[in-house]
Image 1 (cartoon, rainbow over the protein chains, first blue to last red):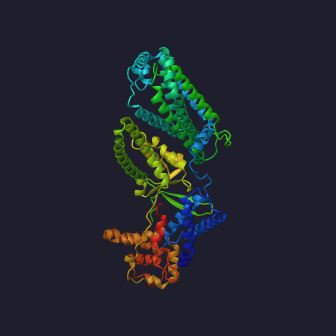
Image 2 (spheres, helix red, strand yellow):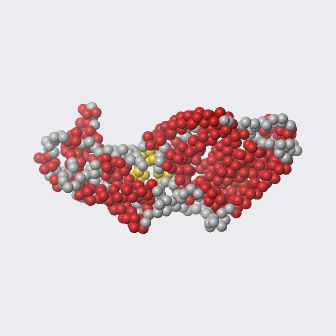
Image 3 (cartoon, helix red, strand yellow):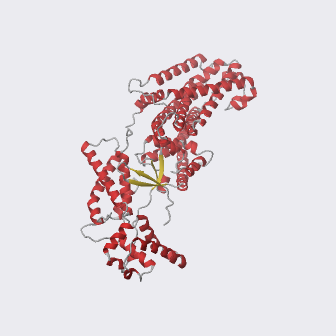
Length: 337
Length: 274
């Protein structure tokens, strides 16, 4: 195509400038809706610039103009053809009480699978401790294998000083960040077709089962419940929800029963993954506080019954929240394949 | 003509227009990561020391805040950078890289979060071995985080107008005697060929004599085959002179005084990352 280049550039440059200005405004404030007339103008400018790009793309002396037009068309294309919702203003309360539990319920089958895998781990860990006491050195982390439960209980109940005195905030921060990292890893390992997520969930179950059986067999069931329930009622569901997110990711990768292309399947779940892992983060902040400031205190400082009741109340409250919160505010469609 | 070794992602719009994004190489991405890691580590070390001033009030509180600052900094740096700088961190800016949606659409917050949270897997077992291997195997040089988030990392090339004045100054161009053939030549030369001719002329003094003669012979033969000029116009020209005339023909501003070609500066500024 032979075109009168100088005339072409002089004629079209104002339209390119106008499109660039409009794009800068849209990019600066994505939430602000454009009036209909401006939208029409925007669309016209995009089509005109795209046509200009088509005309100039083979013109040898104008590679820079071509790149400029490519850049303009690419930016406008992203705005015009984007069908996903624009990011809304941050509404943390609405997100926490609506979006998060709704997303959790939408993928309830993945959560049920995460629970089942963890229970399988609990059973395995429990049996391992029962029938192979030496396995405690493998299945019990954080030094629990070095001391009998009854010895620990005796030591805790007869302690003359607060062993966490002056370290509570540090311990709490450590727990929150460490557990959040574990949760992120559990979700991220969904990229291994969920194999890594399954291993993480199973291993967490093994640790839980091994410790529970160890304490119960040693006659320390009440101490165990009083120790684990206050923070575990949030911490364990948080890891399960991270596992739920990892399983969703793995399922999207495998794509069984879903004919959409891989990119579309992953695109469809991206927002849900972020919501779930965000909710997990909030839950772990609470669990970290409770574990550091409450769970580590035992009788005679805090009665076990009070700790168990507190933990049960948290568990019931969390269950109700996850199953009921936000149920009226928005329709929930089952998207899981 | 040798094929371009730069990987590109071509996006074709429903209007039938195609635009190309140059994909960043794994090496440039690794270098950007090294810059970012160095920056994050340095800043966090300073912040960590500053936070310890809180130890005057409570050592426990100071240590707790430091743990939070380290954790938030290690994750938040990439999240905040890529979200607020539209797909760039400091390292990416330095190496002129940018994260974009793989379909050319607007980068979403969820995409930024997912590609960064999945660094956990990409960084396994050490120094991003998994992620690096994935970028080498993937046609769009995506690591696992990019695959999950449907993003690619592109290179933002510098836009520079070729400085052809030093090639053409004061020289007579015999091809100007045939404006209609010049127009046909401009039509037939692709942008890549034009740039190759300019680069060959600009860098001609860097070649040894024999390779220089061979290079210009090959280029001359190619460009002569595009449009046939009358023998009396071109037969006395060496290959290098012929190429110089071709470049003059292609890049010479056509003087219709009322119109002006957009200045390079005007063109370049919108291309700069925002």
